[in-house]
Length: 290
Image (cartoon, rainbow, N blue to C red; front, side, top):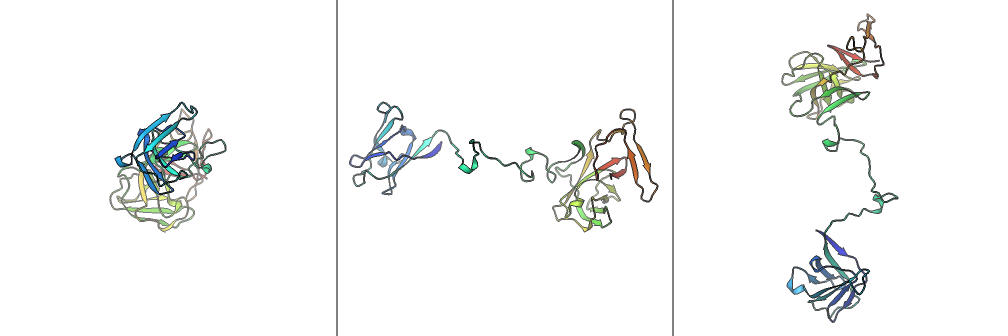
């Protein structure tokens, strides 16, 4: 049920007989409260026998366009005026919502605002990097993914960068064995710098230590209290560049410039669709595309 206030200005009131005539049909079981707002007095209350009504009459014949309701009150209204204003509260079967003018457009449709970020919405609206599961898309193809749910986060002790340019090495120490193997995917979230956040290939250096290469220069500790989290991940099946399966997609060539460190130039037989800075894995090698 929905409580409503009857907004009528054409109520006929006869104080000597305590009669109210409403210019519309209002069933008795729907009527809750009638208040003389001029005198500030309640003259009808459905829950109080002393403030009831002697009669309640519906008339749909005199004026079929809207009908009328005549109520004879038990309350003594002889000292009131026929010009007094009344507030009538009643029950309606259905709740109705009527937005303000600024919330609707020129044709009466409700205005909406498209979300800018999913971080403050529920999980059913899409993937959220710092919450349930991460997914790295390359040209709309699934690449790496992070298993960031449940108790899969590493128990971090320290996370710091060595400050090397152009891409620093991030050294991570965990309080318990991490269980990573060379080339395993890791998902890093909520460090103190964006250059260290994202999906990377981990390089274990011990049972409780590993490192990865950041996206830029990172120096010093980047562990942000309990906010920083690192999860293990994986690579989607067949998420390879053209030439990855000999005999099916052709074969790519890889040529080193023999420098220290070396730069490997890879040529694929078909467009690879990769962008500068994209990270890729071939066995235990980490590539950064230029």
